[in-house]
Image (cartoon, rainbow, N blue to C red):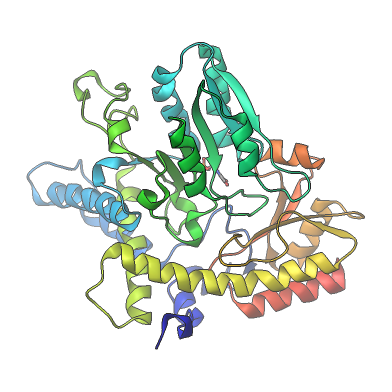
Length: 416
Ligand SMILES: Cc1ncc(COP(=O)(O)O)c(C=O)c1O
């Protein structure tokens, strides 16, 4: 069988997530995945195991502690392999917002008065505010605005903004409102030609396929693990050659012990260990769909990514087509997914109803979604959308199924 013929086994996928059997959630179509995803049983098992038998201070010599420490290291190593990084390049923090704030604080050392930092108006505020704040250290902030015609961040526009003073570029890999996948590899190529450090926000990208950070050649990359089927933590990747020179923000004696130098304090231990469950889930997905066993972790992820993309494309395209056909609704971003150029994160507004009204109707019909600005308020401001009422966002992931999409379209058609 060729890869093209293998389809994601959606029944198998859903059987791994207890939420689809839980009395409270089982009857709902869950379309709020860009907010936070369900977790597979493996994650719950790892969390329970840790809390039951190894909930002690890790890295001592008695078995409960030794195993706790080993599992913490294993979780980090596995995630490093999944995104093609080294273990030393991975930092697990409380959230992407926290990760980016501590990173911006550490990167201040590269900023002299008059230097320039480029931020976008398409990003979530988590990858804007920390960088804008460096204005207080003398940086000039330059805004890379997305096009109001197609809602895309155009690389040709970035070219016009880069000068010999540009030091940092903060850009999203995928906007949590527009949904387009920005060509981060191309962006990094252009930035590196000009000695610019690139900070990629992968929060809306990673749930749809863990990226290869070396292939992207991005300097820093972060995503929220609670949106990639795990607990409320976030991963920050940084290139070793940059990380090792950043100032120590942790205890004084930890100087030089990167990446522990970046965060003042360690991660939540039990949640860190539960990340092994995410790996196990993806590994089980691989084994369920493919026979070849002698395959690296990264290559397993790559193959699963393809299955997921194809499935998500089939979910998203009928919704995009429907929204485009409705003259009273305004879709944001591309109206078609083609070759993974758009995530199935779909935002729209109505010309006649508030987003709150639409969201309420969907919820009355057991469709879990919401209206909000999703902290991308510069993006909504640029689009002229009221940031209090926000957009209606239907955000899908690989465990959603076609019958749910058909049901959504029926409700949109009959009740909105
Ligand atoms: C694209 C994007 N970036 C950053 C964040 C912030 O993530 P966190 O909640 O982990 O701080 C979010 C959260 O929704 C997001 O959607």
